[in-house]
Image (cartoon, rainbow, N blue to C red; front, side, top):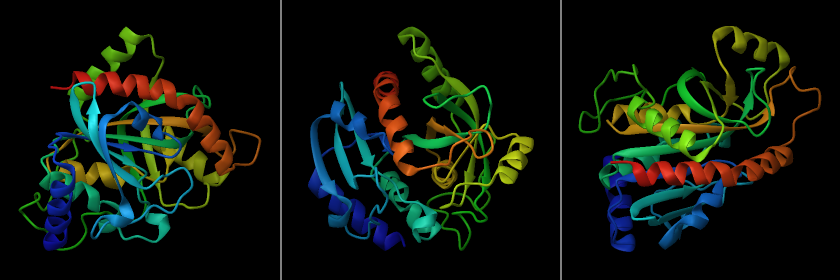
Length: 271
């Protein structure tokens, strides 16, 4: 695996000629932040050696390198999900590559369902912690100490420093947000009402089908993580209408401008 990661990193270094310390992952329907990136170079995932390819609507499937203001960034327009049939190692493959490229901070976004009844579609939730209900872990298997320890700590999976910066920035910009715990669910079906009642009892404020594996791997490799969810629907049993991916995209696109303004400002303030 290390040889493949090195091959991918070398290819990207040769193509992009930049050295960002921050990477952004743009979730379902949240790709509009890419429009704010200047001096950008774009490459399709399908053209990158050893890279998976996005198969889900709302995920463009391209890697960008450029600037947000004066800050150099990588931006993934779309991610990979366990339910697409990829292994957990493949889902998290880009983050191993980012580590070799010198990335120190990762900003994750996602579209997800709200469990906390104080939320509503369009709410932005700053993730404070996660619950893994995916039935597996991306770190299972032989461990390569060159990346991280066998038993990585998850005391602070989402950087307190970056969360405080995000909160301060939101307050200054007048952006409303909530804080909460994100539960990672395998998918691809939406959850049942009984599952949502169970998840609420476990302490989850929102549920989605991504983000948790990436968070684990980034912490394992010593990268700081900031994550924000866009609540695109209330979870099964809370909302009265049936779910649809088209509705998820619609709400994510509506909230995208605010999310982009918030995260764009946060990233430019990161040290």
